[in-house]
Image (cartoon, rainbow, N blue to C red; front, side, top):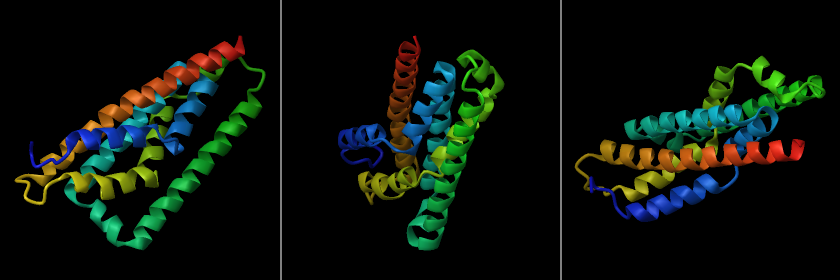
Length: 183
């Protein structure tokens, strides 16, 4: 199929990678717990949009530049870490300033588009996702594939679909348990 080898092995690998906790999972859980279900869902959708970026960059072969350039990869890794620290400081500051404010007020005060955008940036700067798209996906594309671009897109979109399902489940569960604990 399109020069894709061992598709079901790829799906299982992608699902396991999505379930492995990382910056994306922490961002979704943090938003779901602190701001509720809507914020968690938007964070998850932002994460999925970031994965779309990685899919197209990888399909176009630009990720090969990061693979061959240690400096470029190190820059992305540190930029991602700094962005996550910045987000953590903002969330901590926000929770400290609004510690007695009801959850609904906090959610209204925070732009939902901003949550989505932050999720997108968090994923784009996540080195785990960049490594996945650079190192793992090509392993499942046959060198004799008539259209490696299309094969990469199919694998990337498969990863995004399973990842989006997982992220949405994570957001809904975190919001549900947070709501139960608040009661």
